[in-house]
Image 1 (cartoon, rainbow, N blue to C red):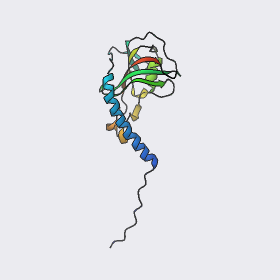
Image 2 (cartoon, rainbow, N blue to C red):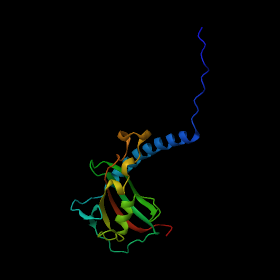
Image 3 (cartoon, helix red, strand yellow):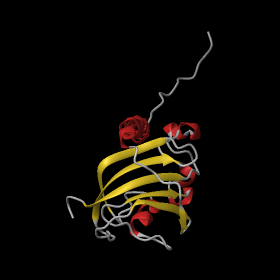
Amino acid sequence: MEDLAPVEPHRTSRRTHLLGLAAASGLLWGQGAQARSTGLDLPACRKLKSAGGMQYCDVRPGTGDSPQSGDQIEVNYTARVADSGKIYDGSRGFEFTLGNNEVVPGWEAAILGKDGMPPIKEGGLRTVVIPAEMAFGAKGEGCLFGLDEKCRVPPNAAIEITFEYLGLGYYS
């Protein structure tokens, strides 16, 4: 009989398990968000203007006040991969605080205004095409196990967000 060396049991760290769980949850969450967002298919517009590396169009101009950095705001939105038009996310009554890096930089710029793009006003509905470097960049978004072909948003992809600014959020 051969003399075999003992095999050390393979140990996986808690962090590795949690990262795997988070990736799988993100994919499942993304599929659910995609299914929910189809009822939120906000009208986009196609006569886009250029500003600060992005393109935008006001589907409906708002008439109220514009938000400021530090404000918690509320929006309805539909987000797509720009090249394919595939909806990857969307929500009604989504709240976040401007300036806290809770959303991609391009979306904040589309809300606050930048390089010739005016800030959105309450009640406004805007479509914005955000280049990859102002969105999810080379990493993409929601990539299961780090595989590029398993991403909700592929690496280096531009995104298109159509959003309706409802006003200041609950905590503002």
